[in-house]
Every structure is written in structure tokens, then in C-alpha cells.
Length: 119
Picture 1 (cartoon, rainbow, N blue to C red):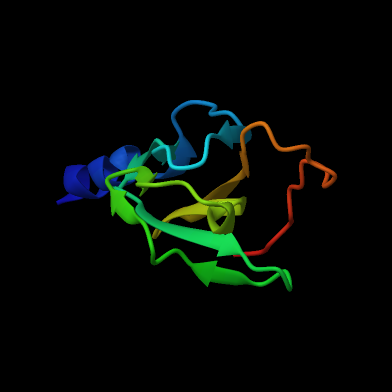
Picture 2 (cartoon, rainbow, N blue to C red):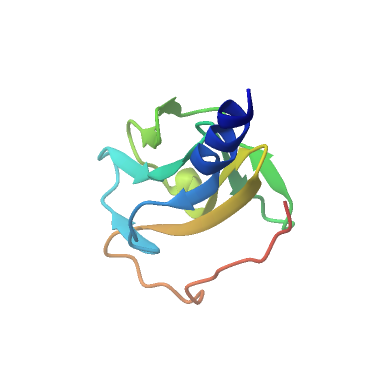
């Protein structure tokens, strides 16, 4: 029993991002867009995806498909532009990162925003 106790704590780990991904992406209209959020942890973290609304709140991403650690937008449109958050959680902690996605070729009078949110 004692070795099981120590094994649990030695193998348990808070979520951690496996690699650094681009924070700013430009996607042509109508193209596929895939946001990657590779994360490790034990137990395996649960991922949630959010988009920042115009009023600054977060809404769960519903019009796209999510598989493993990817968010897929099948046909990128102007409405898909914005800041997306990936949140990974397990019993040992939570980490989050964001991505700013814009239409390729459009002049951006908005700065590359990185909105702070607490999870």
C-alpha cells in the first residue's frame, strides 16, 4: 500500500503545455483553421475551448469541432476572428493559453490582443 501511495504522487502531474504554438494566426477566408493545444499531465487534463466575446466575456466554443487537443474551424469566416482560449485542468492544477486569429490579408487596426482571464 505504501508504494502505491508514493507511486500515485510520483506519477501525478499538473497540466503542462508540451510545446509553444503561434499566438497570432492569419487564416484565409473559407480555409480550414486548426488551433493546437498540446498538453500533458496525470491524470490526463480535460480541455475546454472558449472565445472572447465583443463585450470581453468568455463563451464556450460551439460552432467548431474539438478533437483531442485541437480546435477545428472547417470554413474560416469573419465571425470566427478573435481571441480563443484553451484551458487544461486536472485535480493538480489548471493552465490556459490564448490565440488571436484574424482573416489573412485584412489590415488590422486592432492590436494583437491577449485578453487576461482568470480560470
